[in-house]
Image 1 (cartoon, rainbow, N blue to C red):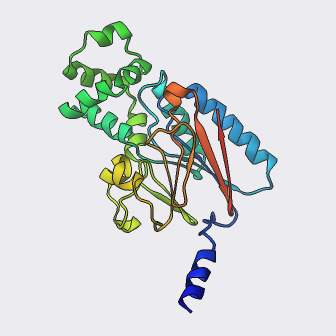
Image 2: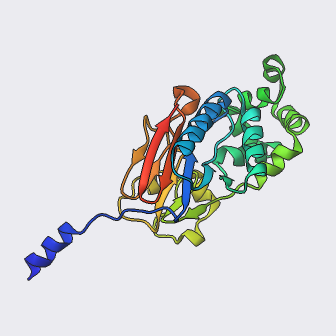
Image 3: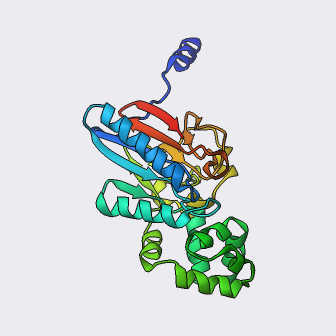
Length: 252
């Protein structure tokens, strides 16, 4: 009897997550200021959606719109306008948005981190010359941020979502703390977590779609899907299409 039960357990099919009925969801990985790649992937999404049967289309940006690439200001504006025009466009808060907003507020620790993780390119995209930037101290960086970053951009970024659940999927920027219910996840985890999430191998409450941790190509595991392919240096921005039980990955 025990051998029979073990055999049945071995034959049990793996869990196949399903998107909410009638929805076609496109999740986009970390953009990091690459407006050129964002425009490319949006065109690919439009073409893919048009080629499929009618469905309610959702766009989910997984965060880290800013830093490192050459046009963070353009990326924020493009996503902001998309979200303003369509309630089915969702954007999540990444750790780079958190640091950006704290730097604007003059948080000294955040300012120093901002300048180390691609903030130079972000500030230049808002109209500060490279030559001017090199002469600034941290307090002056905060002054330039306050002078150059539009209130509309600050308000948009401050209002980003932490977590989004649709069907059998949960979308976050970095990941979730295993063993903690989704309703109790903290921003410090959803924006920043790495090893406790990445090293976890057991099933989770939902299939997790995330960015934050760079891989050469999309990581498709039984409990998580990572789609940060390092766009700012690889020229590869990745999107994931989810509909019913179907998945499709495409990149620039």
